[in-house]
Every structure is written in C-alpha cells, then in structure tokens.
Image: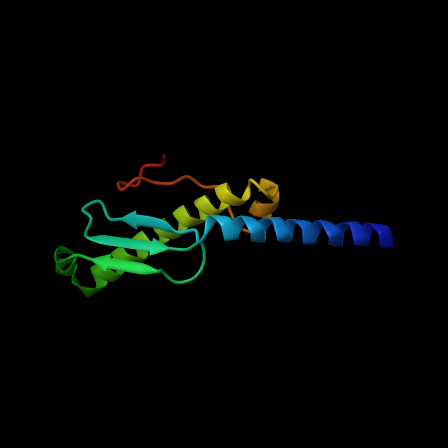
Length: 117
C-alpha cells in the first residue's frame, strides 16, 4: 500500500512540474469575445474577474441595465473561450479526462455571432 501511495505522489509531482513548465513557456491564457456590433469587448481568464472591458460610445445607448447584461454575456463568452484554450494547451501534458474532472472543460470557441467553431 505504501508503494501505491508513493507512486501516486510521484505522479502528482511529475504532472505538477510538467504543467508548471508548460504554463511558464506559454504565458497567461486568456479569451476574448465581442458583441456582434463590436460595442463591448471583454478579455478574460478561465477563472476570476475580466482582465479588460472595452465599451464603445454606441454601447452607452443600451442604458445601464442593458449594458451591464451585455458585459456579463460577453464576459462569459470570453471566460469559456479562455477555458477552452487552457484545456487545449494543458492536454499536451495532462490527460484530458483529468482536466475535465478538474472543471477545465473542452468547449468550442464561438465566433462574434455566437456560432460554435
């Protein structure tokens, strides 16, 4: 039993080192999404708050509630895109099933009109 625990611990350390080296080489992973008219653009990571939000003057005509809803919708698209990119990047060094179990899901990017690519 101790051998099994040691083997598992070694595997965890090896995967951790491989992921760390891979992330260091690839840099931060983000996703970008825009509204169809380009009025709202969001850059996000797979987790956490958006990194960048750009709003055009035309977007201000949506009103506060409309603009807030649009930012939230676009931010979620950007987060999904970042998560997809993270999964694609890490599946080179980690079993894709393990990534999915961790909540890093293989999705599909959407174009600016919401169509899946």
